[in-house]
Length: 163
Ligand SMILES: Nc1ncnc2c1ncn2[C@@H]1O[C@H](COP(=O)(O)OP(=O)(O)OP(=O)(O)O)[C@@H](O)[C@H]1O
Ligand SMILES: [Mg+2]
Image (cartoon, rainbow, N blue to C red; front, side, top):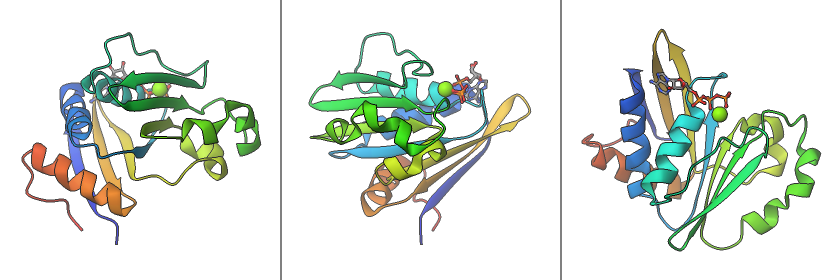
């Protein structure tokens, strides 16, 4: 069974704290799917996580470029936004196999647009509008995702994820 953590009615600072906890506990590599409606906070989360890894440059939304890549120490970071993609074949020109080489973190907004082309997720973040705030479900979808989430939970002062 996949482990899960949930938050209700978090503000933006709360979301940023969760992103920072994920940044500080990442293992060798990781793939994170970011699900949720337009404007719910997927880029906000990705930006906070990438900044917390020590990337000093401005972190742009990849809405038009589809992918923005960064170097954070030894880790290659790829931030994708597939909103404008209609099916997996449209991603061929991106050269995903090359992006997956070596130690890397891949953060994917709108992953459902091209699931067949993507690697399996370690973590799945699902954001929902809750008035001015947000509800959040973080799901570990692989063994390394479970390890990662348990470490992030500790960092956030939660004893362990719900299973
Ligand atoms: N609790 C919250 N968590 C995240 N963002 C919040 C929160 N409350 C308000 N916001 C605001 O909501 C907006 C979220 O925008 P963001 O670009 O991160 O969304 P997105 O999910 O990436 O949208 P898109 O699908 O268009 O890429 C920002 O303006 C942010 O300031
Ligand atoms: Mg976005």
